[in-house]
Image (cartoon, rainbow, N blue to C red):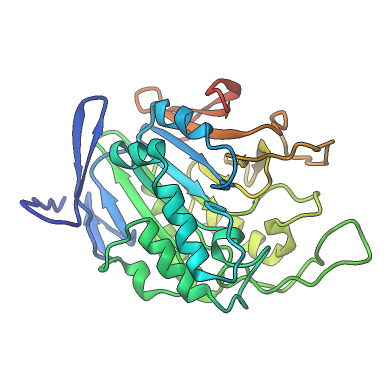
Length: 360
């Protein structure tokens, strides 16, 4: 059974224009809905699938904005922000609102919003202070401005939650895609500085980066997720890479292991993490069982990058490290059940790409 909603007039629906074709995506704003006879827990569901997804992170509105022309001219059906969407001090809410307005006034970003679906998460610099976590005193206020920036409807389930985690399910006749947008800031325990090693922070062996509320929600989303051909997880910080001294899921190893266990328990097919934060681009791969590889595609540095990068260990890396300004692309081929990952430079040229077959 499939429940279809015919919206005659509704401010919560959006109409996007892709390649001179019109797609109407009516939001199904129920936490539980029926799609194809399955009970699903996604916050939003759409009757189309974005074939080409562009994404990036670390955008300082006070720095060179030329990459936005390139992103605007790049064919895409969806743009995903991966955090540090603006650079805020974490102190003055008027400053935060001004920075969001600066981004919204960028003419190329205006066109992206007009022609492309836009979703995203936050990271420390649009959430609060540098490397901030649960103790951020302005997290409620910064969430309100985040929701204004992303035009989150007043009826969206996110409005009633602590944090900005949410999920979107996409479906057409031949393909289903789930996007899980995680909040790795609102519940993250505050770091303890490590003065005894090269690491910036001590490993918190019992710390929980997502918090029980978000874990409960995530598991509800994953219970039916084996029906999806691919599942994309968005995280502000890197998931797989574990050797570098900066922010990463490995700082909270219990949470990292728990998420991998859930992927295996619910038989999630073709899991892909999209991550930001690092001011570099790289792709990592981790075998989580004998048939499933997990990929972590880091794309960071829309307006500024790790110019003095001189190498760092990552035993799971399968790509070169791109330390110039960059954004990322995932392109699905529904007919051949495959996808490509592209690291794009500031001129829109693919500086690295790989092609993967989607596991059944």
